[in-house]
Image 1 (cartoon, one colour):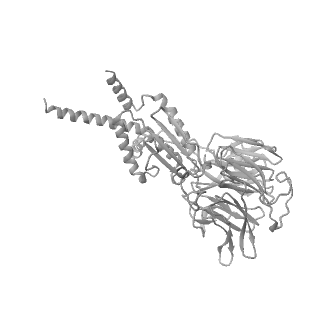
Image 2: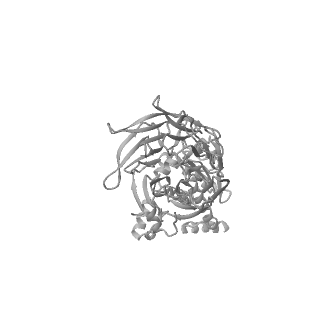
Image 3: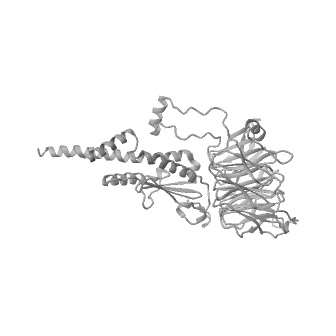
Length: 189
Length: 375
């Protein structure tokens, strides 16, 4: 009874396009957006350590003075965002809400699908940072070739849509599972 | 005269630009290893005229010495070249510069008398280069201590032998750089109370963990202004170096600073538009006005029904997203004085940025259209 009610509430919330915990969502997204806008002030920077190298400082991490303090923005223990910045690059890692085993599997497969195609994505990192599900690496080359405000819009939309997508996939999965189970068990009637 | 003249020079970021003496030509470095010289044609637009090809990495900075008509370029390949114009062949010939640095050069500026130039680099040192007529090349003297990180900006004092340096170690410094080799006769001043030899640190200012992106002495040299990545605008008076006037803004960091007169300067940066700040004689800074003001009403946010479904089809969302209402569509990285009045105040300045646009702003027209603007 209680489980059914919770399931029903989630279904309504998802179709209505809002999260059950809408109160914490808006300030969370605002905080992430403003941090992202500030961290995306990137410029070309030749390496100080190796001559003629021009690499993302947030990955190399060789000179401490050109790195920002990493900032972790948490909505709760499970959902958080880590933004590490530097003078010519920024790395943003997202930990996606995974309530049960099915969501964990779906999330893992979905993220793996995208990360294997990271080259086409441009700003995606091939491997997520430890403790997170997916990471973006945005360098000064990206902010020079693409509009900065559009990049921020895209990342924010990605964050909000991912939860919806995974929930939808889970519902489809459950639905298909039920149908196939019903068909199979008809044989034993 | 219109408020501003815009021209989309390239679709790549512009790392540096400089005008010649009569503004008919413009040298620009885009994000490639070639520097382009553009000539103004009859319609007033700058068209590609010549290309200077010598660097093998991105050209990071350029400067044009208007009186002696020489161009200096420096790049990520640890080299700098001085280009002189050969009338007979109508070509710019590169001259060798012995920078002796082992990291990328980041910034270059001719001195006011144009007999030397300063190059900042990732090797954490400043090279002051002057001409050696015996061997027909430019040789350098280094200022190393106590700079501890990449130099981002350099500015000469009007007296030709003091240098202000902004770097990634969050400090803005003033050095003495009078050269015996060039028969300098330095005088003592508020910045240099007693005669100091080349490379002496005269003043050091802290910037609260913000990389110093732009630094400039005021027109008379008595004030020093700088902008840093902690979103601050700072001014200090040579006569009272203990007190630094700082304003922390709530917009994205500024990248460049240009003094318009001894009581005002313009800054621009990651927020894509220039701002003017006013300074009183002691150095106290106050916000002046924003220069990029759209006269017409902003575009209607509501999309038509058809546009909404089309957007849903192409982009998967029907929200308009963030819109930019500034002229520059990406960060402004350099501000230059274009024309000056007889008393040396700036009457027009140019801005270039990562969107590849050049915008020339006219001060008089701006003062007329923006009531709160005072230069």
